[in-house]
Amino acid sequence: MRNYLKWQLILLFLIQGCSDAPNIKEQYAKDLPAHWQLESFKIEAEEQRGTKVDPVFEYRFIAEVSPKEHLHQRVGRLMDTDIVSVVVKKGAESKLHGKAHARMYQGEWQTQFNMESSPPADGSPLSAYKDKVVVQGSSDYKKLIKATRQQLDKLEQQILQDDQRFQQGLAEYNTLSQELAEKSRLSSEQLNKQQQDYQQQRNVLYSQSRAQSQDAQQQLQAQRQQQTAVFKQQYDAAVAEVDKEHRLKTAEFSAEKTKLRQWRDTERTAARSSNNAEAEAARKSMARADYTVHKARLDEQLRSKNQEIEQSYNQQLAQVQARETEHNNNRRDKLAALNTEYRSQVDNISQQIAAQGSAQHAELNSSQKQQQEDLDKVLTAARNAHQALQNNNNQQLTAKRQELDKLQRDMAANRSSYTQQARLLQQLEPGT
Image (cartoon, rainbow, N blue to C red):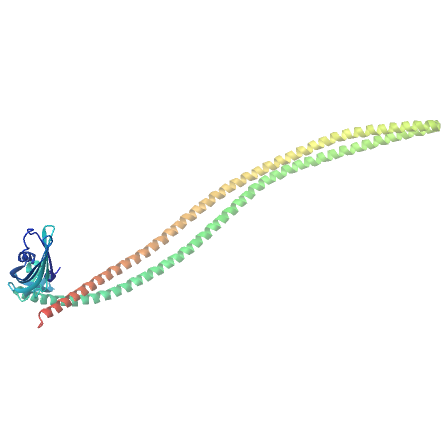
């Protein structure tokens, strides 16, 4: 809080004897700032209020105070040095009017001062300033003014030089920006060309790999067909041999069946002829009634004979058919065995061809993958190089821009410092 506020309201708690009235002068003197002293103290009016239990004193007083040393106020700051002027000289007395209110509280006098006036000026002793300080008008002050003028001249020259450096740096920045932009453009064009070449090479690689895969598949397919054809010829020859044997056997069985039918027909014809001859002879030699009986007996004999012939025929035919069935079963088993062997051979060839195809496909994929990785590495290196160029360009521009920004900030700070010091110098020395 500033010193002049202390002259507006002074609160002081003092310990006094419980039976005596407060010593207002002593209390007031103690409450003064350290660099002020009390010259005189006069009580104009005094009134005792309250009771013995709760005593209260009211005072009106006039106090004369003076500073123990010159008091100063800060008027400016140059070259890290505070410039002060004397506002109150040592020993200059000031008459102050005020009131005091004293009351006993918990065995102590609680006194409150209410000032109605304050010293004509507020200030601080030189010891209150922590930094370098000079008094306005002193020799040190004049030296400071001279040094400040010299510093302003140097600062003005520095501002001019910095401005030239900034303009030169700005031109260099623009030139560098154009050069780096051109480098970036050329690098982008080169990268785009490499990317196009990369895509074309990928397409060529894919086409080559696809063609190689198709050629390999066709070769394997031809190999499979060639090897399968050999087994097919062997299979067809074996089947033809079985069919040849089957045709011969079928002819034999057909001939046997024909012979059996012929035998049956011959036997049945002979039996019928014999029966007819015997019946004719009996008809001529026997009476009609006897002939009828004899004819019926002959017909039964013929029927029995035909049954015997048919039974013999069926038995022999069954034997032939059994041998024919056995032959057909054997033929079917042979054909099934030949087909199984042929299919097994074909399956083995297919598995071998498939294994070779898988191996060739894996080899082609591995080769294609390696070539693709090589292409990717080249393109990645190109992209990284382009990005590194971009980063380097940005770093150069950023460094140059930061350098210009720092120079611009320094210029602004120097201009601000120059303006402030020049204005303050003009205020302190209007003639300059």
